[in-house]
Image (cartoon, rainbow, N blue to C red):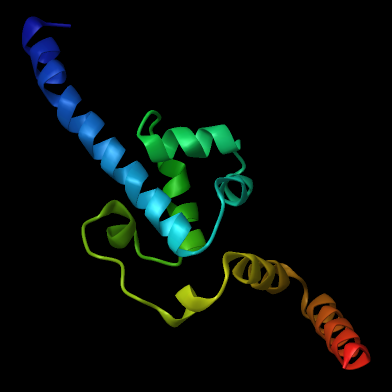
Length: 129
């Protein structure tokens, strides 16, 4: 590597660290806004809670293949996730993270299984009334 490239990389490091710290803080805020724990986010991403902590602290870079997953989990655009535009307040933001996770799970079921689960929940609700 030539000296010019090394100097350019060294100059970019503080800016890069600042960006990743800012991105981590954005992820933490989005997670908290949805009443989601680090452990819940970690489970959805398939990583450890410690990894989510490192992302949020800016100590570790978020893998690029997680960006689509994060936009889906937080229900925001990539521009909003990356800080290009401000996240908009959406009606689903009022739904708890746990309920949103259950809805996502229900949507992944087959139509027959989904109907079964809904009927079961309705029957249990009637029994409890």
